[in-house]
Image (cartoon, rainbow, N blue to C red):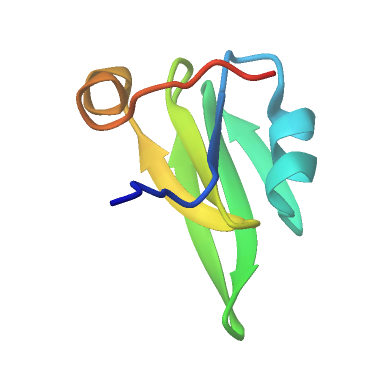
Length: 84
């Protein structure tokens, strides 16, 4: 039996890459206030708001936002595969 998984990608907010993260996830707006990145992301007909502190991870699942994770949850939930 084959084990298959959908391709899910992640990018970490390092406190300096807000614009890159916003473009990568398809955000229509982003702001940084007191080190917290706020993203406005259109999903299924409405805007969703996501907030990330420096060091947090943003998940992109099949081209859509799959949520945010703090470093501890990211390490517990996700396993990074080597990329070719």
